[in-house]
Image 1 (cartoon, rainbow, N blue to C red):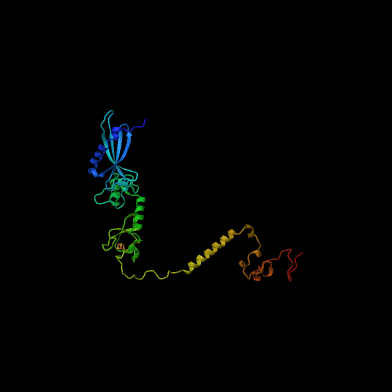
Image 2: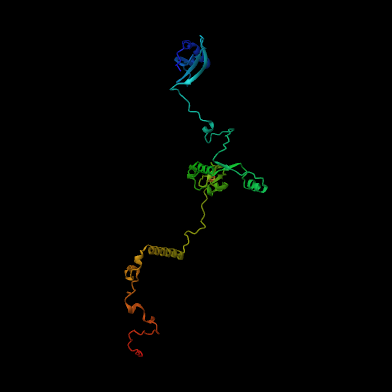
Length: 319
Ligand code: SF4
């Protein structure tokens, strides 16, 4: 396709284009000098004018004019205020649902329904069974279409704990006692009960807010109360028998482990190769016959065998 040539009729229609821009600008002085023209196509030209409008640095008026074939009169197609290369621009447009941040919601604002909100799980739906529905909806309070998911619960807990109602808040660091011991703390329901409650003290800066158990403030219910003596003894009672038993068990285990770790060949070693510290110091050597058994432990009625040497003083064997 051949490039469009500059149209003499349209190129000379500068005054017509300026008048169109001034009409749109509403004030003639907002349309500045002529910046040139752009051939858009066959019998189609855009004239550009500077703008003097405050806050529109780098912008320009673009007035597009055209004519019919063999026509001698230009017609205005459209008028725009367009940004140039160095124009001052606003930030890129972001959908409001993505632009909205926590805390932006004001009175009367309504958030859109999110069908796939991962912070929520399916709640209990009525089954038609009167007894089951009574129990679930009335007694357990599950009669809601969606309830908090584990993710939603976890995110809320982290947010609350790390926020201005957690243990690191300035009033919590300065407090002498935590909320967990305060009479104004109303415990929450469910699994969050172990970590959070609601402050119900109108004198507290946290009145009506969720506070962590280790949060605190100067309006604690026990402020200035001298702590009483503990019901627990100063030192925990000790049982010597139990302590001794623990030591013996440990030694016994250590002995078992040493025996297991000893190589099999060392098990058959003679008694004299055993470590000296495992032998009683007063035990005689095994090869000393006389002292090996006390005399009074010899059996009194033991008869000598036929090939045994005669004892001095005994009767000769019968032939
Ligand atoms: S009064 Fe203070 S210490 Fe007591 S629950 Fe409220 S914030 Fe916690």
